[in-house]
Amino acid sequence: MRICHLTTVHPRNDVRILHKQCVFAAKAGIDVVLLVADGQGNNVFEQVNIQDIGNYRLSRLKRLTKAKRKIFNLALKNDADIYQLHDPELISVGLKLKKLGKKVVFDSHEDVPKQILYKTWLGPMSIRKLIAKRYNAYEKKAVAKFDGLISVIDEITNKFNCTHQITLKNYPITNVYAEHVLPFTEKKKQFVYVGSLTFQRGIKDCIEAMRFFPEEYRLILIGSFPSQQFYEDCQGLKDWERVDYLGFLSMEKVAPIIGESLAGLSVLHAEANYLTSLPTKGFEYMAAGTPVVLSDFEYWHPYFKDCGVFIEPGDSQAIANGLKLVIAEELYENLQKQCITTAKKFSWEAEADKMVAFYQKILKLSSES
Image 1 (cartoon, rainbow, N blue to C red):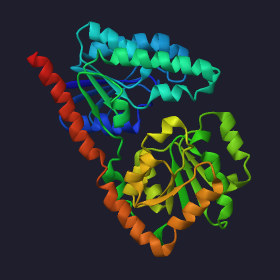
Image 2 (image 1 turned 90 degrees about the vertical axis):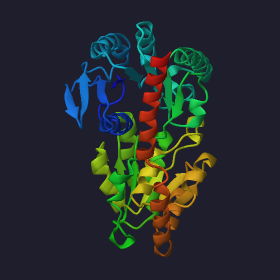
Image 3 (image 1 turned 90 degrees about the horizontal axis):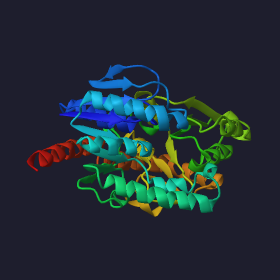
């Protein structure tokens, strides 16, 4: 079996695409090809054949024109049994592949119609609502023609009407984090946030929460800022001097930093597209034995109720109070045990088995029809 993954938006080292889906499929004996558009050239990573069409990721116009043509041609050249699309803008490529009799799976990482409502650069809310409505109709109609649909939560999966569909939750590769668990006495006086460094994800709130702690405490930020302007806005905050900004790091480098931190932060603002999502980094914090401070979203409670503290998002004082609760030494050992125990229930290793079975089902049923 050969699976060909296509993305012009995500980086080649995207954890969900490369480290989880591609690498684990390759470990299961599947021939895996990943097509990317970052200009870093071709290479092989843990049996995954990465092929690059050139640097198009940072130009939306080029992605929608040249990149789509190039990735379609390269996909055909690879002659895969299944083509898996990771970007909404590649749906049209999938439809072209279907016309040629290819098996196509769409991987919906996020609820795109909801996201559109918060993209202010698209214009006023009335325009965004119209775009979201039209995209939603287009996406559902197109995906219904594909052979499979993968998504990260049931609420997204259930929106579609595809012949074969499955939810593969974006849980962590627990073994990577479990080896970095440290007892309270060996933890550094630091808190960690990993992920996109945006206003909506509470980055300014996290920075401002540091003013409520003694000077020896630090905030570790790992990830990328969406713009130079927002980066400079954060640097202009009085409490930025309490921050260690490390930029984007590989999963292997992130894991020990989480393990040595007292608490992990996932304090997204209460926007509609976040209320029914799962905070991937929250699961990573748990797997490394690091208690979490999270936004008080009802959807998150079943997953994290025994592993940290829920707070009102958008409030730096509430974040600080939550952090103080989870790092109380008399409670920490029990919280940490709960994190480690709970993390075992939410592992990518189990999701990967379902993924491979899903591919096999698509090919088996297509061969029988």
